[in-house]
Image (cartoon, rainbow, N blue to C red; front, top):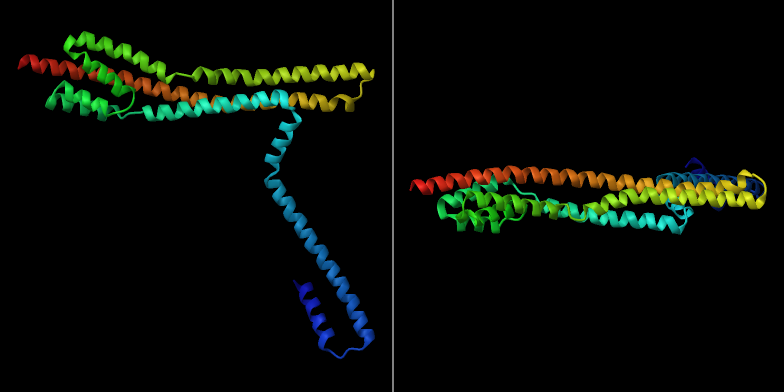
Length: 270
């Protein structure tokens, strides 16, 4: 900033002062030197800013660079595994979150409906509630007239059906978890074979001859492992979510049978 002010001051003096030609020439030389220094400083500041922004985006750029270096063959298949695995995982997560139900609140509503309006009103409560627990309650209530044993069998059987729906397509995620690193290893092995073919063709062991090929071969393994790690996190979350819902289903089934037993007992007493 001081340099800029000095340049402006000298310019004003040259415009309005009564300096002689020799002094003006000397000042113009000084002005030129100062301007050159200012331009240099500004360029250095711009380079520094560019380097700082480059550090912020270096990870993404490096990731893209390494992915392109790995080649379109195995890298494309590994990327496809990631996309398909994430698509299945996101679909399952949305489905499981929508299947989550407040079982205690639902059981209380069903019990109140049974005491006030009977089985049909309780079934209507289950129809208006989404989730596997409500579906199990509905199947149990629908078999109430056939006895508690028939209702229990219906609850157990339909519970297995609901578990199958929750676990649908989860096996595909585990397949992609296993497939991604295997494809990476296969790409590495093929790359190593190509590197040794180059050594055999050249007839000499030069590091520069095979270093690039080995580096590219190892990149497929790295990206395969990255994909497997990402999908494994989603897979573990989905499995834990399914286990939580299954536990709620089992507890809710026991609660329903207790409610139906009390309901039958009251009706027999009346």
